[in-house]
Image 1 (cartoon, rainbow, N blue to C red):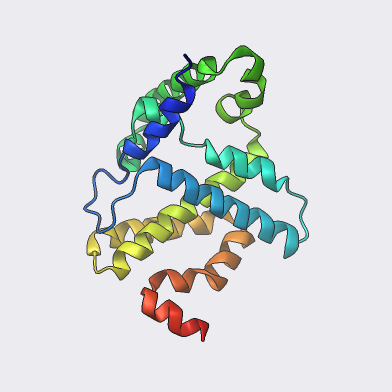
Image 2 (cartoon, one colour):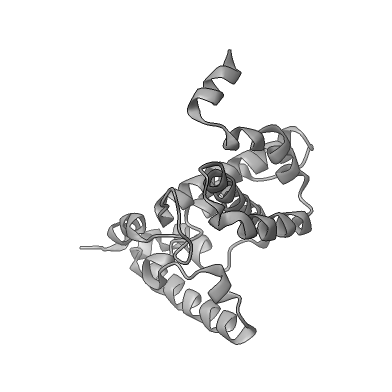
Length: 194
């Protein structure tokens, strides 16, 4: 009996945004799916619009597993993680231990295929995933605010600032072309198609 995938399936049980009142609850499995979608979008924009060479599929796979360690650590809210350097360092150590534990769960003959997702991921690929992760947080704020939830106003402003610091034209392209639709209701989206 190998528990690896049973653990990963439990990501759906881990709630995100634990310190915030959410109109639309979100779990880590949903978030991982969204980050994989957004990583694909950003990498595809990089290739097709900006002529960059990006290994899209590898980046998407890394995105799919980017928060898998949270099945062991839980989702620690960003304000807690980043409260001070000591807490962040401790969390990074905990995350590394959780990554090692997950990696060790994978049967030996498969381990090398999974190791890059948990241990020493490619920094260039990780850059795309981090951009998508931040973009997903921003879109969560937009959706919450559009639902009338003012709880996310400050978070949105802070995330906008962090997005600017990314200096990723792919994120800017995404926000310009796709971002406004996240503020719309289903009826408004349907009207805009016709």
